Length: 438
Image (spheres, one colour):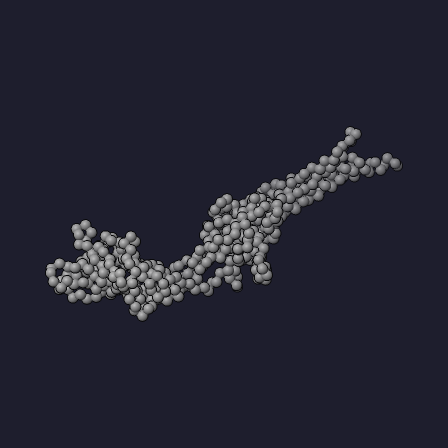
């Protein structure tokens, strides 16, 4: 019985060390695989109760575990959609075959890095068939509220590389100097005009035309310092959208700045807001906020000297442009860039965190599937909670230390040889036992 148990223990030792060698060979083979997680083999003794002074060898068994929570170092790349997670958390992905079949919700898999590029249908996917998942943004760039304990709200990130986009103008600021001499008695009273371009809701170029007419005194020697300001909209066929009487101060400390902006309350035109220095007029596409400056402010409309000078005209919005590229910021927001200089948020990629990442089921291509052992997952905004951030233009290297694996290989080889020697010795002892009968 004792000799037999020694033989069985030797066989178990061979099997366990063979398992360890298999994990080492896997680690070494994937030492250059981006995002690879090291597999570790542990040995556990098997004890059999001994009675009557005899001892029976129980042997050993081997268990393997993949250290998914270990991270490799990050290396920079030249592709904007090469992504790596710096810190805790994992990227949600799905199999491209499930996405193409479109047979309902795709199964969420997790990974820590990936080289994502657009395919023929615009999906951000790796060359091994993983499609990046994210929450789609609304047309205004905001991300709706999605459930965080389920992947139901996630969709494959699909980029329309031929997309056109424009932004309507909603605000403009007028920094214009009006000639103070035009309000003197005897002046010609000529109207000064200014046309400011804006973009409507369809990206079409329109203009707000502003006419400044000086109020010339009919008698006396003092200047009126008053003007009539009229706004018209080209998109509405030149319809008047606002008419105001503006007055400037000639005081020693604030000369040339706005003193008052008045509107006829019966006209129905929007009033001037002295707190913000704005007028909210209505063009054909909707409200447009025009900033002419606050009372006593020299950054808006002024009346100085004898020249008409549009000093600074600024506005938001942009014409229709072509998409030129896509990037992911550290918080997981996917930005689309257009050749007009605008950017737009189109998706948000969350980071998935689990209580026990090492309990997940390992699949091909460095992807992992949550399991009961890994615990319930939660979808965080990158950089929020316990999660790290997302690094673009980067990949995560393999978590394998080749020098350590080679050292472990030497130890495993010696242990395997020793167990083989045990089996050889037991065989020789059994042979001696057989020879007793001769």
